[in-house]
Length: 233
Image (tube, rainbow, N blue to C red; front, side, top):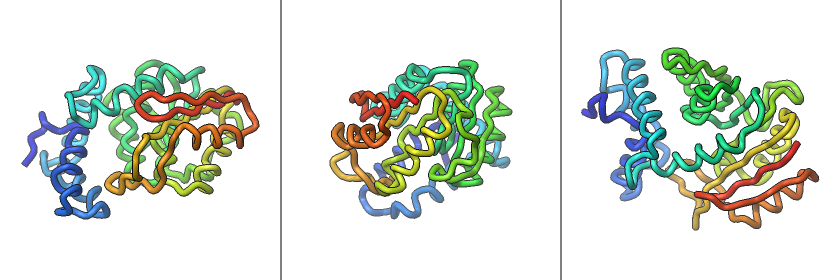
C-alpha cells in the first residue's frame, strides 16, 4: 500500500511506466487502478485525496522530482500562469485542477470545467479544503456552459490531444466565445499519441499554426515543453 506521504501525481507516471507500458494493465483500466491505489491509502477516501493534492501542489511548486510526472507538468503550468491575463479565468479539461488551484492561489477567480462529474466534484471539495476556492463544473468543452465574453483568459492545457480534429476546432471556437481577452492552448509534442493518457491526436507547430489561422484573430505559436497557441480575443 502507498502511504499518504508518498501520494502525488508522480504515482500516475509510475503506474503508466510499470504496468501500462509493458502491457500488464490496459490503458482503459488505468484510471480505475490509479483511483484504487490513491483511495487505499486512508480509511476516508477524501483524506487520501487531500494528501494527494497537497503533496502534488508542493511538488509542482519546487519543479518536481527529476524524471517524475510533476517535473514534466511544472514548467507547463509555469508558462500557462505567465500567459494568463485578467481576473476571471476558465480552464477547460481541468482534470484534477492543479493549474486552476495555482491560479486561484495567485488571486484569479477561476472556473474549472471537466467532462467527468466525479472529477469536477472532487476538485470542488479539495479546493475548499485547501483554501484555494475554484468553481468546478462538469461539462463538455465543445459546448461550454458559460456566457459569451465571461472570462478574461480561457485555457485548454493538454486537452486537444484527447480529441479528434473536428472536436478540437469546436473547443477552440467555444474558447473564443467565452474569452474577453485571450485564449491559451497547450499540447504535448509526441511521435505517436500516447494511449495511456487517452491521447488520440499528435501535434506539431504547423498543426498549431493551422488552428490559429482558422480563428481569423491575431495569434502566436511557440514551443516550450510542448506546443503553445495563444490567440488574442
